[in-house]
Image (cartoon, rainbow, N blue to C red; front, side, top):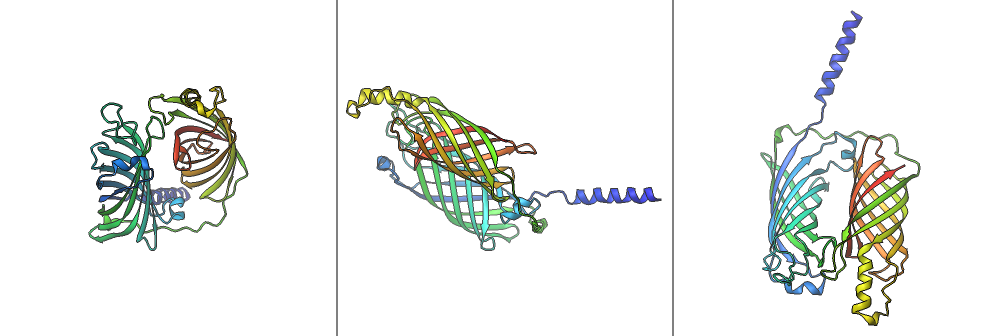
Amino acid sequence: MKYFWLFTILWYSTFVTAQESERKPISLEAHYFTGNIMEHNPSIAHLITSHPEGFFLQYNRKTYGFNAWEQRYNYPDWGFTLIFQNMHNPHLGRLYSLYGHHSWYFFKRHLRLSVGQGIAFASKPYHPDLNYQNNVYGSHFLSTTYLQGGFVKENIWQGLGVFAGFSIIHYSNGNIKAPNTSTNTLGFTLGAHYLLDHENFPDYIYTEEQEKHTEPVRFNAVFRGGVNESDVVQLGSKPFYIFGVSADKVLSRKSKIEAGVEVFFSTFLKDYIEYRAIAYPEDNSSGDEDWKRAGVFLGYEMRFDKNAAFVNLGYYFYYPYDFEGQLYNRLGLKRYFGSQEKIYGLVNVRAHAAKAEALEFGIGYRL
C-alpha cells in the first residue's frame, strides 16, 4: 500500500507540474504613423521635403510572471516588429525593417514604452552617379532602432484595444559604408491591437523574492570586430579588431556595473591618416602617425533573463591621432549562453557623442 501512495504522490506531482507549465499569450498590433525627419545635421536639409509615413506590425508575447524576471519588470511584452516607411522623398525611397522588441508598462498598464533593435533595407541608397543626393544611407542594409511610447488600453472589447503615442525611428549603417549621416523620424502613432484567446488570459503571478542577489567581482575577456569606413566616400571599408578585459560587479538581479581597458586596431584609420596628409597639407600631418588607440571605460548593464542591454562611456588614453575626439560611448545588446552564463555574444554601436564610428559584433568570456 505504501508503494501505491508513493506512486499516487509522484503521479499527482507530475500532473500538477504539467498543469503549471508556462502558457504563452499572444497579441497582434497594427499602427499607422506620420511625422517629420529631424534635422540633426544641416547637411541633410535638402532631403527634408515632406512628411514620412508608414506602418508598424507587431507580434507580442505577453508575460504574466511565470518567470521571476517578468515580475521584476512589471510583466513586460517581447516580440517582433515589422516597419514599412515611405520617406516621401525621391532620393530616400522606402525602408523595410525587422526588429526584436521589448515593451514595459507603467501607471496601471496605461502607459507603454517600447524599444526595438533590428535591420532595415533601404530601397534607394547613395550612388555616386545615380543617387549622389542621398548622403544619409551609404548602403542598402542599415542598422535601425525605434523608441515608441504612449497611452495603451488593452482588451476594451472582445480582446480589442487601442494605442496612441509617439515614435522615433533611427536608421544608420554604423559607418560600415560611407556616407552615413543617418536619419531620425519623429512621428505620431495611432493603432489597435488584438489579444488572442483573451478569455483565458492567465492571472498575474507575484512571488516576493526573499534574498538579495549578490555575486563576487568577476572578470571578462572580450573580442569585438567588424568593418567600417571613414566619412570619406569610396575610401573603402576595412576590418577592425578590439581586444578588451574588464571587471564587473552585480548590483542586483536586474543590473551590474563594469570597468575595463581595451585596445583598438581600426585599419580604416590608417588609410584615413594617409589620405588627410596628402589631401590637406595644412593639417601638418606626416601620414605616418600611429593609427592604433587604447581606452578605458565604465559600463552599466540591465538584465532581462538571458538578455541584457548595456551602455559604456570610454576615454582614449592612448590617442596619437585626433579623430572625432577622445570620449566614446556604446549602446548595445548582450545574450548569455549556457547554464553558468560564462559565454556571451554582443552587438553594439560605438560612437563619439551622436557620431557613429562602428557597428561592433563580439564574443565574451566571463570568468
